[in-house]
Image 1 (spheres, helix red, strand yellow):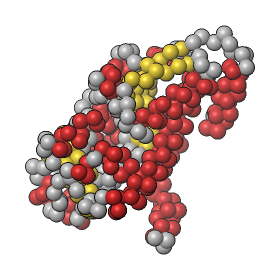
Image 2: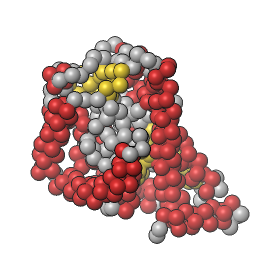
Image 3: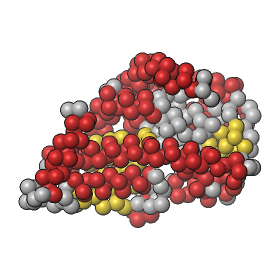
Image 4: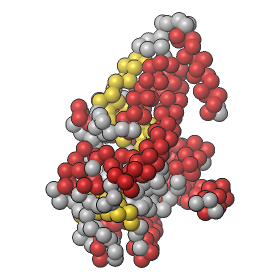
Length: 354
């Protein structure tokens, strides 16, 4: 069914519930675990909005209670908790699970890959969502898009990165496939829970980190200890995820399933719009409030080395994992088609109007 027809259908169901037509519908209470702390806006805002929409549309009969990482104490354990049925849902990012199943990695973002509009088109109309469910099926879970950050910045560095030698031995927090790429170039890569990032950078446990973009980064204070802020290459469209326990989802009444699908989709895209707005707003303030921040772009030599390492690793992982290859082939084929339109519609317009 077309998405907007789905919205209309769900709204009709919601009206029926509110007017009492479904007053006998059983009450369902779910729990959702976040990878994030309770104040990590707008990631948490997306989850709160989704839960509120579900509760409103169900007339209060479908309630989703949210536990932040501060409460459940296991930010990178949410996949296992949903898999075991301890929580019915989670909000996280698929590339965090590369150590458990490499086939889950590509559904967040890939270096030098799709932009957010391109990726959303791939998910909903280019077969991406179907491939994501195929990858999560062995884990008895569903995964749905959970909000996009848009293109992320390349990270905060204590020192300027001028040559490839500057990356060798550098200790950096960077997740996903980008971490594999930098490790190939000699960087010491680690993954640290969001709530511990500033302390790790301040104490010198790491020399650099990437997080999101100005809207979220400035709030966490990274600029106080690492003044070099690099433009991005590694996550052109970082899509978070809603993990859903398959058994719990299938036990829902059909109208609740549809309410949940619609609420997740609306909340996800709203997070993309909100994050875009907040980054633009924060960026406009940086020059006056934080004049010491040095905005840098990686040199052509470094970028070319990153691209070469990326292609090498993609081939190795694709050769070893048929499903990973299927996902990457799908992304590459869709990108080849959609990028022509992106160039015509966005790039050609922007290059003449900046």
